[in-house]
Image 1: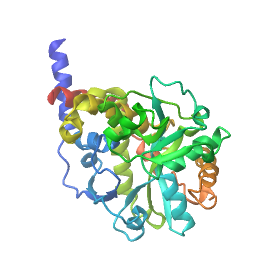
Image 2: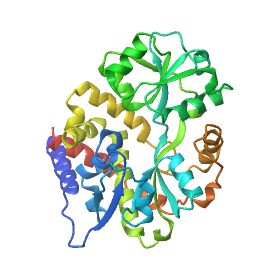
Image 3: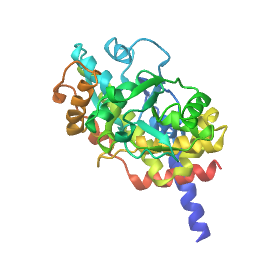
Length: 344
């Protein structure tokens, strides 16, 4: 049995490290908010397991620290794929941008409303008449939409922008300067690192959201098909690996983005939160949720994030989804296990 297990491990390792054939790799230019990060672990994992090369592509990450809207990179041809949130997507379509959404990277909202774990606040309703902290101005829209779905208004609370500093956020909620904080996953990690345990009270209606998606130039769908299908399949396999081998994913991130794992506990917490956001809730990984997009827009409209509604059929295109899911799940499981054994 030991000899058989050794043979299986050797075979799996060989599969992972298969050399790329002589074919020329297709370069896929992509821009996202955090090029290599635990937050978008499928990229790092797919790189570690060699999935992009296996699918015939190489990824060129464009600089993300720019004031230029990401959609502009798609329009001018610099980016084949841009990661956009729903507000960026809808507003780009309203502005006449010829883009199409082809894959939902995150189907759960990264934003949330958090309260001190020991507080008496159990619902957004309970925040009426209190002061709520915003990590930044952009968190106001999420807070307003969360209040709206509960039949309340942003005028029912006071708000204050706290900034992204972990110690500042911790002091504000610990010392009862604010009743809650409207923020996102990195903010809960920062609070945890400063000794603050947070409990999330986000309304259920706000949890389902195409928080981050891949968009591209609508005119390039067929011309770019081979490269984009390869990229999305590799991304899907990287995503799937976390559902069968979290330790492999964690180890790939320790090696791939070590700065985020200098504090092991913080790195693990970041990964746990990121898996919750990145794992698709649809049967097909990355599938497009017409109903969710349609239901989301009235909330964005009421919060002032978008000026009008858009017919989702004008920008949602699932032409790549079947190819992105055309892989052997058992093979990914074996490859992840083999990689971990070789990289402990």
